[in-house]
Length: 217
Image (cartoon, rainbow, N blue to C red; front, side):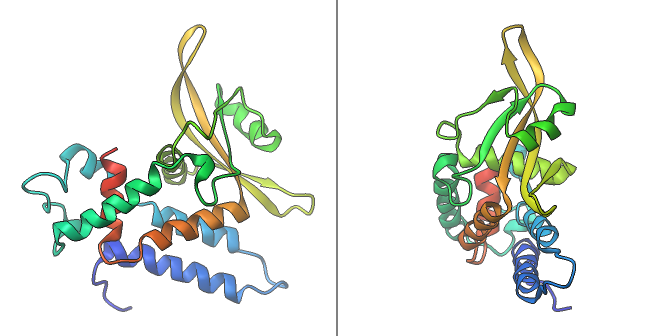
C-alpha cells in the first residue's frame, strides 16, 4: 500500500477512484454492488474534522494550523478551496448538481420515515429553493455517520432511490417537537452530486477547505 502523502486528501480521493473502477468493472451477471460502493465513497468523501474546525475555529486563528489536517499547508492555498466550497454550499438545493430533483421533507416520528421515503410524502414538505446545499450536506453527513438510510426499490427490485434522514427540532402549532429531516434522491442523481463534490476537491488541500467551509457555517 502506497504511503499517504496527505491522508485527509488521499483517503477520500482513493476511495473515489475505487468507486470509479467498480463501476467500470461491474458485469451484469454479477451482483450489482454499485450503490454499496457509492455509499462507501460518500461516507469517506463527506468525512472531515468538522467538530474540531467548528469549536476550535481552526483555520481562522493565529494558530490556524494546529489540527494535523493543516500541517504543511499554506493558508492562502486552503482559503482558495474554502471560497470555492462556500460558493458551492450556499447554492439552493434546487440549483445544485444532482440535488435539483431531490425531495426534502420532515417526519414527526422515526417510524414514519420508511413509508415517507416510499411514498415521497412526509408530514411536511420543505422548499428546496429556500434551503441551501449546506443544509442538504448536513443531512447526508449525519445519515451516513449513523446509517440513517432507507433504500427505495423500483419495479424490478433494484434500488431506485435513497432516503437520508437526520434528527432535527422543528416547530408545530403545539410548540417545538423532535422530528426528522429526510432527503429523498434517486441513485443516478446522487451519483451526479458525488461527481460534482469530488470535482470540486481535486486540488491539494481542498478537503481541508471543504472541512472549514462546513465547520465554519
